[in-house]
Length: 477
Image (cartoon, rainbow, N blue to C red; front, side):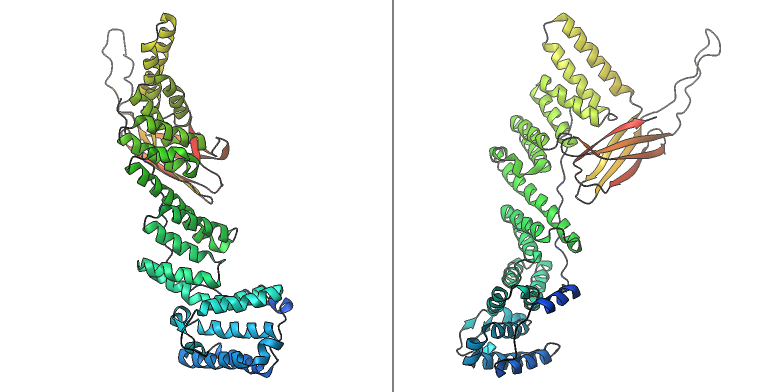
């Protein structure tokens, strides 16, 4: 029996399209900030004047006018010796507001000089670090002001992170990486920088870094349902990074590295590594990789199928038998699967020296060979996409009937009547979605058909239950 190895397709998450990000502090947060953040910006007089100018310039669309006004504010407040001495928190809060308005100019946010900021000297100054350091002075002195300073930080962050997303969309990877790192200076808790950095690393085939960055995305998103698309992309890209690492090691024949820490890669990536090992004729490593995948996901169809095929290649029929039986348990209406069981029994029977055992094994191989030949339909699956929020399964049912059984002869000695054409068939399947241990997470019933003889019908199921890792089915009726 020659059986092709099933390749597990990786899930590739595309970069999010650049968009103007919503960075305004929510209304409830603004109310909380107003109630708990009390910073005196009325003294000395330089602060009060600065606040008036900042308030007036916040809505200005004239970048040149706004930048000049902020330079004047920063210069006057910084030059007032009373400000930092008498009111350090108010001074830091005011300077943070002025710095962040300047940082809306992406050029200044990333390449400013002291003169650009109204400060003495002509050397380079990191404007985003000034926003961060002045905001921290306020946050440490007034913990209740963190919502207010987050709003300040986000104003400086918004255009920089959008520049990172735009560069990413344009495949300007070095620029995207640079701007994402810069944006993280002022809002390190935002998952968008990690998303950009992870996508850049994945594109550059830096798989370990990619997995780290996308892991950070998941940690930063947490349970925030407004970022479900970002979370889904991170989950897919972690899988893509793992597949990439596996394929890189597999292409170099470094299967030992994968087997050293199989838990790092997940059952899908290990299954794909096993396929690569099989194609390299390293069946021993392939068997270990498929077995490692099954330790993580007991009923993973592709791992079961490929491990049974690998044992067949190695002529190891005894370990093949329980794997083939488990495959048949979850996938009973594919003629290949009872044939696997039959072949395993045949191999064990051929090696047996016990006549009684040999007969029992031969009876079993005949039973499963007959089952393979007599199945009325063949069930296959063209899609199994699993995720935290939704699992999709695409079912294909082929009607294997060619003609109906001939009618009984009308009288003794008469020739049998010609076989009648077989009719269409409707097939009902009960599908159980399983977790990694084989426990049932969700159960659904699907009807496929009517399907004409020799034709194939299809249907699709979706489960909204979390934790689905595999599935099994039974034919009903």
